[in-house]
Image (cartoon, rainbow over all chains, first blue to last red; front, side):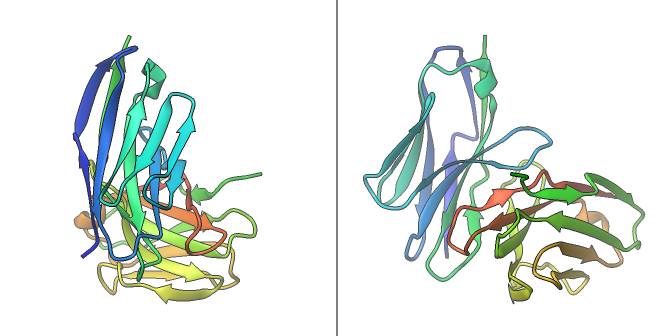
Length: 110
Length: 113
């Protein structure tokens, strides 16, 4: 069964304190791993797609990496506006729909 | 261009009422998905359309849930005889192709009393 597990469930950082969010997955035939950001009361906002192990993508203070079993979302020198829930999702071989983790709620204090 | 839009944004229904939730996908997107998101959880798949064809409805929780996309553009998710456990955020997403990036709308927050 395709499954996505995110850790930690919640993360509190001071502004400027870098850290990483983890997404572990089991899926038959990975066709893509997706990171989304979700603010309260809003829909998920697309951040990155990763397709194969070793791939990395960056956007501002965020960097996503992918291995055969997990993905990391690295946040460098975060700012309070980076506070949100970060969702990881996989697209498997036999499914057309995304399988989501429960998310990591990030709070960045000034 | 315009993103995915959904209406209404909020809906309060009495138990037993029927509700209809609307999704306007990104223009030209062939694939359309509906997800249900409970508080503190990630979105869970409900159903998938390719143009007007409903190709996967394996995530619909009961036969009270029905979705349609008659002209291959706008989609409606209908819930009949709503129950309290139907309270959730209903998200719509569209993509250019089934395996391409899905873009989400703001969601409809449904509260069943």
